Structures are given as C-alpha cells and as structure tokens.
Image (cartoon, rainbow, N blue to C red):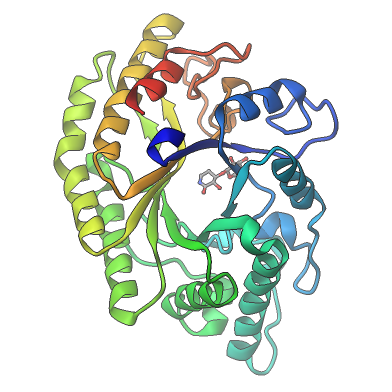
Length: 338
Ligand code: XIL
C-alpha cells in the first residue's frame, strides 16, 4: 500500500497497561498495529462523549495518551470525529443543555469552541478528520436534529458551520463526511440522503473534501459472487455520482459480518475473505481512494460481537486476525487486493 502512496490502518483504543483490549497498551495488539498499520484512528476516545464531560470542560487524557503512542511509533492518526450528528451519540448533558437567551449564539459558540480546541491541540499531527459523522437518517433520508442543531437553527447550518470551522482552524487537513450507507438494496434511501447532503455542500460552497465510506459490510452467501455482482450496479452508480462531484473517498471503518452463513469457521472465513476481496477490487478501482482503515485488527475486540451478535451465538469473525491473533483468509484477501 505504501509503495502505491496509499495508507492502511485500523482503529485502536485507550487501555490501562496490559489491558485485554484493542489498545496500544496491550502488547499483543500493539504488535499488530506496528506490523501492519501506517494510519490509526481512535475507536471512541476523540468523540464528544469521551472528550466532553460537560459543556465547559474537556478531558484529553486518554486521547492524548493514544496520540503520544502513535507519535512515538511514527504512525499517523485520523480524527474521528468532530461531530456525531445524532442525539443518541451526543454526550448526555447535551440533550438537556440550557442554551440561554440567545440559543443560536450559544450553540454556535459551543460547536466552534469544540472544533477549534480539538484541532488546535493536535495541529498538523492530524491530517484527516471525520468532521461530521452519520447525519442522515436512513429511514427517510432526512437530516437528524440534536439539541445543538435546534438551538443553532437547522441541521444544515450546524453541519456547514462544523466544516467551515474545521477548514479555518485545520487548513492542512482533509475534511471528510463519514457515513455507513452501503451497497445493500435496502440502503437506497440512505444513499439518496447522503448524495443530497453532498450536493447541498457543493451548492453552498461548504469545504468537504471526501466521503468516508465506513464499510461495515455484510456478506450474504458462501459464494460471494452474487454479493459482489450487486456492488457493480447501484453501489458503483452511487460512488460515480460522489466522485463526479469532485469528492475523494476514504474507507474509514472496514469489517465484515457473515450473518447468513453456518457457524463453521472455515466456511465463514473464506466467504468473508472472498467478499472483502471483491469489495476492495470495486473500491480500489477509484483513484480517489487513498486510505483504507479497518475497524479493529482482531475478532477478539471487535465491536460487532456486542453490536450484533450472531443468532447462533458463534463468535463473530469480522476482522483480519482471529481471537488468538492469527491471520485469517481476510488478511490475505486485503493484501492481495492492495
Ligand atoms: C462504535 C465503537 O466501535 C463502539 O465501541 C461504540 O460503543 C459505538 O461506536 N460508526 C462509527 C463508529 O462511526 O464511531 C462506531 O464505533 C461504529 C459505527
């Protein structure tokens, strides 16, 4: 990847020394990061929920420790994220926050202060930000509202302000709108909402450089060919429309679920690998794609285990390394695709 000018990496977490987590402080996990990654992203520690104990306070302890480790190992870090525009992902206090007599001014101040403080703190060490995460409701393609966006006036005004502020205080950085719209036919409404949002950004002159394609994927059958064929249709048309508007692409959070497959490891791992390869082949055909990030290196710490357990309770296997840190066929598939 490096030889092609691309970067590959993964999410990682904070942890106490030796913690059994996907952390830099877990030597086994740190080894995987150092061996395979050129680029990292904090799984949770840069989110408002982690950085903002209250409307007036910041707590950078954990994220600073992660940045320090990345710096010491000459690894780049993406910023994830400056605004996760959904009520359930804002910190608890935000919902009941009193924006006072001039709510629009207070909301503007809160958002600008957050982005300015975070971006100034890390300066040029962070060269790519998910400025806004998941603002589109997949049910009806509308934009979510939060207490912040209600006070500020509208979701559009909130997202635009986030990007304008990020451009001003981090002019060196790639600014990304990140979302999980994916290739499945059932995601058409979500994709339409994302396209509309990206068109709106262009029309209003909002500084957005790239679409973050999260890539929390689901492979359907043992034979990945049907799934991959589906990618060639609507999904490519979606990416064509995005890139035609001048946006770059980033794979920000790749992992693969195997919902419909039998519990047998060998079969599932091969299907996941085949699908990963097919997906990356489609994605890498776009020269606009420079960076590929996994959402975790090993099945042992994958969020999918808790987010969507398999019905048969068999362990999830969505990552390139298994729970014993052994590389799986998915690892080889990624290497081959690159
Ligand atoms: C997830 C983390 O992996 C979990 O640990 C946390 O509980 C919730 O968030 N899209 C995103 C990521 O943009 O921030 C999410 O990360 C996964 C989906």
